[in-house]
Image 1 (cartoon, rainbow, N blue to C red):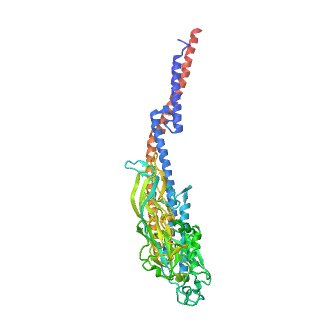
Image 2 (image 1 turned 135 degrees about the vertical axis):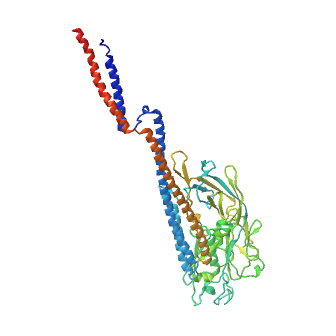
Image 3 (image 1 turned 180 degrees about the horizontal axis):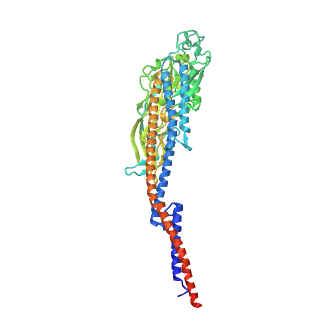
Length: 588
């Protein structure tokens, strides 16, 4: 018998420690509900379950991302619903204005509502946001800038590129749009009714029924008197000129005006570069210094408006010939008629068309008629990468100044309609002089460089709808402003223009419908994505639970076993501790 080492007690103590440790582990699992609370519990299981946890949390966040994406799309689509309503109202107004039961004044009121609705389309496009992100101005597809203030870029959708292997890369870049050659279209030419003298006039200004001269007052011209004998501009009348590119100018005509002063007012309005009251055609013309606006005001024969007082010098001679290279725009066979105003645009194509609006009586007095229809310039264009010179589009031929889908299927570019147009306007008869200079020549070349640069930075709206990297959906929302929809300069001043407006509005309505349809399809896709993510998260959670969670019944059984063993070990330790006391019996 020994007393220094109580081996039974030591053995019993070790067993008690193990039982207490087992009971503590069981208590930890029972209290946490987890089978693995630390790496020592199951090192491999911990690594696997943590990986699954990252997937589960990523999937749950992806569900929230998709739900936020749906909210964004609903915001955009809701705004487009109102844009649709506005376009339908504008079309209704255009159909109304096409009916000739309405006077010019009635159509002006219709035009006023159309103008306000156009501004509202732009306001919706410029201000519709989700969490501070603009949705309908094209910024959700790309950010753009240009070297020419008149060049506009319209986004139709996303730039993001996805190759055949599913690799995703941003689109965009810097591009040079170069005008290789221009087959010029035609600039619009208008004429008025013949102006004849109504009253006998003292001096040599004319006699009753004769052709009015430059100094004849409008008061003395029969066209400015109605059938009831009323002078139609007894009170000053306003005449509004609206150009195809949206520029406007207003002049006031009163009883003191003469033929020459009316021509000067018209010339000033057409030439003026005042952004608030001018058609800015002086921008489209460079040449002699006499082309200053003051020169146009101080001469009776301007570049754009002339009053023809005789025909002898025009027999067999065109009143004007615009050329680009060797191609005639308004050439050959167009003759002046004595007693009429000739009004011609310096800009070929629809951008240079001029519409007049005012009172019915004033428009009837002028009785403007188109004698040369505007036709678009035909441009041949090269598009190159501005950094490395690689060809993006070579010798592309387009009618007008809209480059559609060449840089990218979802990128449209509208450039200055006079870019690269080089030519002359000249008078072949010495009786027609500009500022006293017979046969003056004028270059039609606003942008003499003949090219413009466009920078496009991809900003495709990316909705991350997966737990891992690059598991996303790219969404591009088109520019839904009036210019992008082609309804920024609608005119309903007469039947012809109202019908053109109807056609443009039909195209715009279809574009908005297509955009809403695309957004609806993406929303449905996101709904399916959410369902898929939810199921995946559920299944992964179940798998992670089988690894990480504790079986409470089984663990309770283990706890009970350890508890009983711990109690037994404690009792046996007490017995073992009493064994050395038997030595005392030997010592007595």
